[in-house]
Image (cartoon, rainbow, N blue to C red):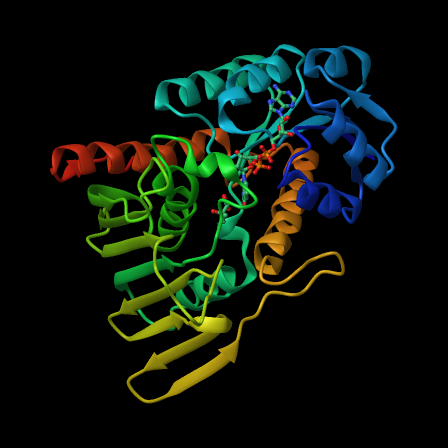
Length: 340
Ligand code: NAD
Ligand code: 89V
């Protein structure tokens, strides 16, 4: 069994710990949190006896095959570099870092140490999004030329994650990062980006609305629009609505995971709902299932010695879009991004 150590026993780590319990051939044997109360409560809830308030002490004392970092971004760089120094493969939650320079240094540290690195960028692992991508990959809509990725909500995210209201940056860095990654996954790399941001809720510091236009290297265009300021009765949190037009048809992931595939002669409707895992809770179940899926992918890649789809290196491209979005919003300019 691959022995994992989890660092950060906060809000989202509970999902990761539940999902690790169900993975074949891997599990969490030690946990760490600087907050002894959270550490104790999590250790008791998941029956994990090896508990540390210092990640360096955990890495020195435990024989680990990987670490899973579930802390908030300010600690990510030091913790990833610590794992690299110990030669231990590492998963790190998104956003990998607040700056591209820090993220690049983390990727370089893992490369230099020869350790595998994956960013926990789980949205592209959501079952409904995979189902939409499979339709495109099967050639059902021909060549995609336009897509829209919409995440519009009035859900109170600040209740469980109060730090989201406190930073100078909010929706692009925390949520838009997922949707930009999904846009890359579905439509390929972007070559240009334009972004406008707004802050509608006066009680928070950062932007809670972002509208982003991507020009893809393929020539296709995408709109990525995110809002946590939309008063809405039929709240769809945390669903991403997607539509992709191709030269032979179109595919849409609509509300409540309805997948509609159209060509010139017919319309097909499917239910693409994510499975409800036994420990999952609506409305989070789609995200929770994607946590299990990305962990499964990590275990497969680690065993095969293969780079994960959302490797540190891959994630630098998503972070590059986040960085470009803030720069575009600040300057009002359309920016070139490196599509590589
Ligand atoms: P949180 O504040 O609830 O939990 C973070 C925990 O890390 C806290 O208990 C804190 O004491 C601990 N911690 C901080 N620094 C530490 C260190 N150096 N060593 C050990 N423990 C330390 O945060 P959260 O809401 O659980 O978010 C954690 C991360 O998960 C963030 O990066 C967030 O963006 C991400 N997140 C991802 C998803 C997703 O779907 N991928 C969803 C929610 C949150
Ligand atoms: O997935 C996330 O990173 C979360 C949420 C969906 C609430 O934005 O922070």
